[in-house]
Length: 138
Length: 138
DNA sequence: TCAATAAATGCACTTCCATTGCATAGATAT
DNA sequence: ATATCTATGCAATGGAAGTGCATTTATTGA
Ligand SMILES: [Mn+2]
Ligand SMILES: [Mn+2]
Ligand SMILES: [Zn+2]
Ligand SMILES: [Zn+2]
Image 1 (cartoon, protein in one colour):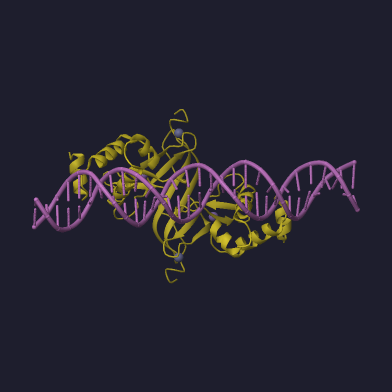
Image 2 (spheres, each protein chain N blue to C red; image 1 turned 120 degrees about the vertical axis):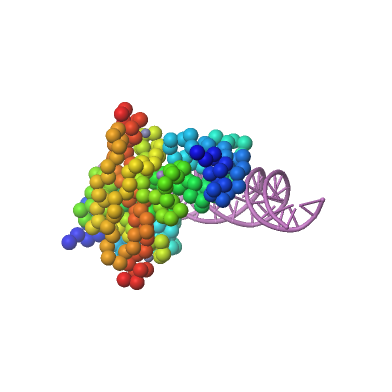
């Protein structure tokens, strides 16, 4: 059982107060968050710092970015065993049209998608939209 | 064989010079276009008019919007038999990382995606990224 | 320990695209 | 013809992403 400090070090980034806080914030959340969400959670910190922290996390495959079609980038922690470093992880994402939250369905992998001859598939973004379990009333 | 005028009328929108021009522009294109693309093609027209024309087309299910992950909305004409009015049409989109073009793969329908209990799937956005047929050298 | 070096943070500013309010021009209907 | 509705144009706004540079903080190694 690694501490967060050890984990960050294993990813070759320095441990700072801000990074620990943001990591913990993401770990507590069950949903993908926007930069604004983080901003609201840490009003004393500068937006740029939060932005660059997230970008650093993304580079080091600590978080992955999610484009859920709302036009605003969201981020979620990579799961253990996630191979974002190598390729986009192939789990799908669910966006709730009611509560506007986006969650990783890490257990649900994206099926193999066929493309026409001549096309080369490198990665796939799949977002399912609808009503989440909380909003559908079970 | 309907004329474009008749087609627009059948969608309950007025036929104007601008709308005819934009419709023809979209019809000629084999790829999804951005608002800027349209702007460049019609420099004399105001950006807002082009914007609202596209939005009107979208409401009337003449075009569909495509989020290909570039952060810029793209649009393409709906095919005959496309049922965008009822639900998002389930064909997939391909974005070329080389030439940056996005095309509708209308023949390639999105497979049924399973979601966990309690979740209700209403529609699905699926974008495959990679190298297109032109760029891969067949 | 202390100076040199590198990295992280904060502030200001920019860019890009989407969107809206309001005034005017144009088309339709009675 | 006049009233009414729609489309267009112009100006402005807002949100989010991204960058340059100065300053603070951490790390290195002499
Ligand atoms: Mn995810
Ligand atoms: Mn399409
Ligand atoms: Zn919900
Ligand atoms: Zn290409």
